[in-house]
Image (cartoon, one colour):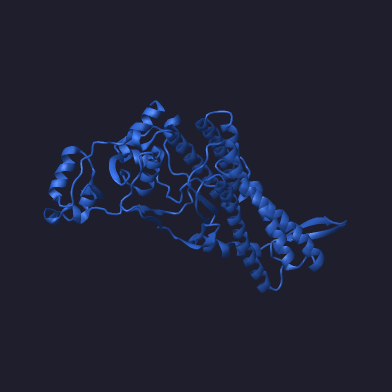
Length: 435
């Protein structure tokens, strides 16, 4: 399944974005608020950029990198380590015969490894199958990623989780045809793998026999990839088929309306899957249904917030009149300044250069009895997050959510030219949305 950007972030909501600013979010129509799109995403410690412009991503999640493909980091979540033996066990417990006519002769291909003997071979082939299956999932995500890269979209990583893969993209294109191509790419890869494996399984049956474990492995892998292709193409937004549906809607109506319609259809499919899972489909279908419903709601809220900010630059909403402090400023003085001016944070300047930022949270970390002797330089944050004035306002909002911060210094040519806060963004959203 294709995923929205950042993406590798957590699932914090813009409801919290509002609450922390003392605002009450509306929950209707375009005023519905956003949680970040991907439920199954890595938690990132933010992109740390120091005043020299150096920076790097630091992973703060239970995942580890196993390599790179075409420059894209491939990571495994710890849940992935649990699902491999589980899948292997499940496929050792059954065999489903599948008669196929090959050149006028019927062959009973086996789906599952329950009939493979001896037991050691059964387990070995089933483990091999489970590993190959998730390699196929990674290839599915690479299909999305390669098409995205073709259109200039940066791919941060691909991560394999217990329920599948996540391609973490910088952004999702608003062009309907581009989004449709990206969405179809993943299922196409699954379909090609599925057809290829089934054809190889027929060749294996002719050479080794239909009961050979290798034949069973190829047939099972082929069938499940074809099933994954069909499942992902269901119009259950935000799955791949749902994204194709949204792209079709978006070519005929405003993007927000298209997303809302696709999301409603996705929720309908999620409810249907939920009840099918309850009445015989299995717990996994129930979990997938819940995931789809929540993800569809997230996507709808995200679009209702981000789209109104399109075309708005940080320069348009930032505060240009800045109050700054020096590292020598005493803590009691900065506390009085925060209380008097009702600001929760200030840039720290040294020789007219940005040296850091101090916030009320930094002050609160200092024990009360030690505050009188401390200065801003003792507690200020030097690894700060900055943004350029020509950056999109939506990018500023995304950075604040990902990093759980309230403001971003605005830097141009190495100089501090302003600061943009959550309040500035909320004001822009209200104005642009016509609230």
